[in-house]
Amino acid sequence: MLVRTDLSGCAQVFSCSMRTIGVQGPGILARRRVLRERAGIWYFIRKRVDGEIVMEILKQRILEEATVVSAGVLKLDSLLNHGVDPGLTMELGKEFARRFEGRDITKVVTIESSGIPVAFATALVLNVPLVFARRKKTLLNEPDAYCERVPSFTKGIVTDLLVSRHLLKAEDRVLFIDDIIANGDAARGLLKILEQAGSEVAGIGIVLEKSFQAGGRTLRELGYQVESLVKIASLEDNAITFED
Ligand code: 5GP
Image (cartoon, rainbow, N blue to C red; front, side, top):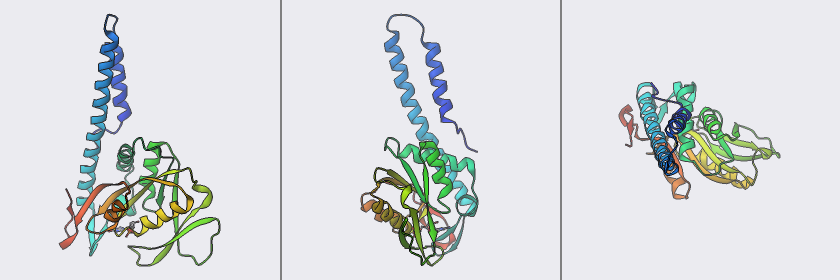
């Protein structure tokens, strides 16, 4: 069960309580300021706590619903790769928005198809547009699109990532969101597309990082802020072991 999903309700409660406390009298402005500051700190803490609860729920759902299909590959169809839990996905979006707060993000970018729901949730909370790179197996030259060839981790084939040139601008500050990171090929392909467009990368948000594979680590070493909601340290012996 999600404990509380509506953070805006929390802010409303505080503003109401401040209004009722705000009676006439000397020093009232100073008192109001203190109360407002306390409410701000409390609101910040509540957001963090909400994020931690959501991450625990996500871990629990992974333990209950995921299966290890082969060496290093997780099947999580009910949440990420085939089905969507809209309530939980919105909470994941809120958590990404919290982690990248104040980064002046102008666009969320992801890769079709499994990245789209959580990227949509994040874009909705940040109130910015979403763009998803299309995956195609094409020999055609697409002059109106940025294009990068990447190996597909699960399909074992090479595909092209394509984004129409008019959807990315040099002045964009982009948050890249994806469902899972393994070796980081898909992410690197997308980052090359952003580089071609001249867009700035504000950060990278990943729902599930398989930290026994090099993708997340390599991107951090390159200087990117990579925020993974859940890290899986091992899938050995068909058991899911979280990093912390
Ligand atoms: P990478 O390019 O980082 O090696 O792989 C990332 C892409 O492959 C993601 O888009 C993700 O959907 C898919 N992927 C990587 N590992 C897994 C996995 O263990 N299970 C599933 N279902 N997809 C994965």
